[in-house]
Image (cartoon, rainbow, N blue to C red; front, side):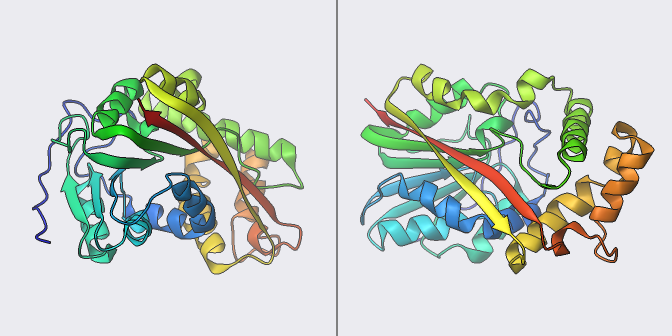
Length: 287
C-alpha cells in the first residue's frame, strides 16, 4: 500500500497542553507505552477488532499501538494513525508496520474517513483538546453505524509512588498540579476534566457507553521498562527544580534523595517500592 505523505496542519491555537506541530516528546511517550503495554493492550482488546476491519488511532504518538492494531485487523485490514506532532509521526513511521497509513495534523481539521471506520482508538489524547466534546463528535463522524470508539486515559485517580510516605506523596501531587496550572494556565477543574469522559461520550451521542478501569501495578524488583519510565519520564524531568518552589525545603530535599539512583534510599531500589496507577477506557458505539 502506498503511504500518503505527512500533511501537517497546525491548529488555530496551541492545544490545551501547549501542543503544536513542532512539539516533541516522543521519547516520553515511548517509555510510557513500553511500561504500560500489558494494560494498554487490554484496553485495545475492548474494541473487539477482527481481521479485515478499518481502525483509526487518533493521537497515535510515537506509534507503539499501531502495531497492536495492525496485528488485530490482519493484512486485509486498514490502520490509520494521526498525530499533530511531526516528530511523533516520524517516530511512528520508524516502527509501525509498512501497511499503516500516517497523517500529520490537527484532528479537528484533517480530512478523516467519513462514516467508513469500524473502530477508533484514542489514548491520552482527549485531554489535550480545549473542546473535548467537539473532538469526540469529530471522531464519531468517521465511524460507520455500529462502529466502536474507545478513549483511554490515565490520571482519573492520583498515582501511588511512595507507598511508605503518603504525606510526601500528597505534597508532590499538589506540586505537580500547581506546576501544570502555572505552565498552561489551567485551573484544577480543567486539569481533572478527564474524569468526565464517560459523560462526554454520552453527550457526543454514542450508545452503549461503558467504562473499564485497569490497575497498573508494579512492585520491586522492577522490570527495566518500569524503571526507565519512572526514572526518565517522571523523576528526572518533573520532580527536580520544577517542583522546588511548590515544596518545603525539607520535602524537596527528601524527594531528591528518593529520585537519585546514587542515594542509598533511591525509591526504585527499595524493597518496599509499590507503584499503582489506573488506566480507564471508556467505550461507546455509534448508533
